[in-house]
Length: 197
Image 1 (cartoon, rainbow, N blue to C red):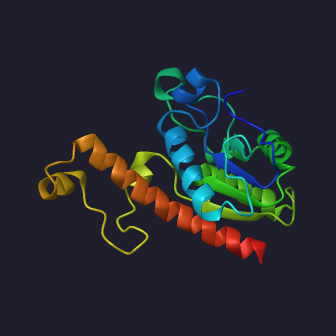
Image 2 (tube, helix red, strand yellow):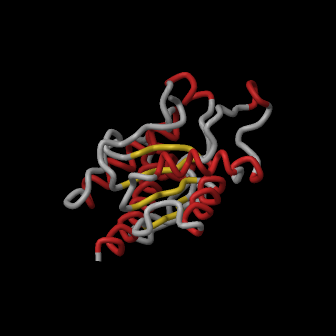
Image 3 (cartoon, rainbow, N blue to C red):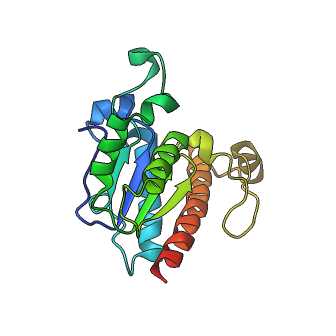
């Protein structure tokens, strides 16, 4: 199923917008660049907050606010409408997929936040669940993070290359992505620590 993966633990779920071409090809949720960024984020979370929770792809539940595959060549669009994701049929599916999650539901993207907020306000997911909204894990959204976890500016790839001639463009880009994922991990860690208290 390219839109849903049930985790082996019931502690954390990530909810994305909808599966696209990369998910269809891999036949799993959060594939392609988003999947790579998710796995790097999980590694950071595991290193920093791994004492109380298992931050592995296998342990977490991964789903999408909309289950059909959407991408321009296939459907002419990249995600569902607000009306579609809020249909009773879709909310019932999401409720079933998130029913076992007891700790933290992390939404990545606007449609995901919309659906999970609707479920939470209607008390259709575990009432102890903490909901955290993060930016989408695609590069366009991550690149909006301009300051690292230490408060230092994240230089553009061009500025990095001008400053350090030993770097390659892909290497500088990967370093920037890691700095941005560390910021997202810190946001999640803060929410998770709050949840634990």
